[in-house]
Every structure is written in C-alpha cells, then in structure tokens.
Amino acid sequence: MTHPFEIGREIVLPADPEQVWEAIATGPGIESWFMGRNEVEACEGGAAVMDVGGHREEAVVTAYEPGKRFATRTATNDDGRFMAFEYLIEGREGGSTVLRVVHSGMLGDDWQDEYDVLCRGWPFHLHTLREYLAHFPGRTGRPVFAMAQTGERPVREVRAALAGGLSLPDGVALGAPVQAEPAGLPALAGEVTWSDEERFEVRTADGLYTFHHSPGVVLMFHHLFGADTDTAEAGWQQWLAGVLAERP
Image (cartoon, rainbow, N blue to C red):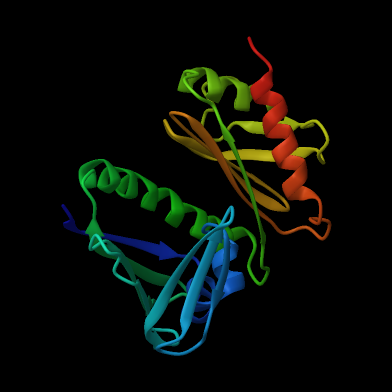
C-alpha cells in the first residue's frame, strides 16, 4: 500500500542565483554535490537521468525557469510509487541565495522507514551543496561511487574500519584534521566536515569524500575536483574491499 509524503528544507547558500541554478539544474552541477552521474535536458518536458552504480533512474523536467525554479518527476510505478523534486531559488543581498527544496511523492509498504531515511539524508545533501559552492566555486566535480556488502557485521565495527583506513579515531569528530595515505590512492589532507551515525564527510583541497554505512552495506559518494580522476573509482573500490577485509 502506498503512502504520500512531502519533505521541505531550506538553506542559505554562499553563491548567487545563477551559480545555484548551475548546481541544481545541470548534469555536471548535480554531479558535484549529489549522487551518481547525471544528465539534464535544459527544457520543460526534457529528461533528467541519474545513474548510481548502474541503477538508472529517469524523470521528466516539469518546471524549468532558469535562476528561479527547477522540478522533476519520475513516472508512476505499477505499485503507485513515484518521486518528485522541486527547487525554488531566491536571491538575497550580498550575493547569497535561499534555496528551498520540496521532495514529495508516494512511498511503498515500508513508507515510514523510507521516509525517515529521506528526512535524515536531506540535511547532509544540502550541507554538501553548500560545501561545494563555498569551496569549489566555478569548478565541476567528477562523481566517484563505490559499494561493498557487509552482511551481519556490526555497523559500529564497519565505521571503525572506515575511520581506521583514514587514520581517524572511531568517533570521527566534526572538524577533526585528516592526514591519511589510503592504500593505493593519493594522500588525503583535509578535515571532517560532517559526522552523524550513518555517514561522515571529508573535505580536501580537491574533493568531497562521503562514507555512508548502514546495516549490510557501505556506500561511498565522492566528488573529485582534481585533474587525475580516471582510476579513482577502481582505486576506492579496492580500498574499500581492503579495509573491510581487515578485522580488529
């Protein structure tokens, strides 16, 4: 049985409306802070496509007003489920912008759990958008995705393995400095900019690195702004397998 839902969030961003529009309404912009590889046709009625780890999600652009409003909606599944996103942009004095996001649609039988996950995720995603606009203006990032199954391994143990692979303590405190040499990858030098029970994020001079862990699975959503990213996805996938293989 389906259940309707709506989530609204608002954030002040350190960028003008044109910069925010590029970030939320273009493929390269979305790839710099959200999830997966994205394509957006620049017109109402155009296609908006997101691919995360080979899972392709298609939507239709339902509103396209540059610098003001962007919206998409997926098709309705046989069971009645669909997702819709609306972004409303309002410029402020001093070069900042207020962005309001409305995520709505229909969820399935486990709608309460799904709704809770979505509610927890949006503050983090908007934080990453602000990090992108504040620290990487005028640049576009390459998305890097990696995933590993963890079975019944305790989540706390998995988090400790991820933190240990980055030379961080288990707690992964907000603001903690990061000086790590992950095996097979370039060194990381930065700081922890987000940390909650499900994920943490590290910002360096050339990237935003997200490590998400939940029962049974680890997901990494990175956004890299350096020139040498051709082998990054394979490298991070190998690193993830390596740190999870090690036992305390």
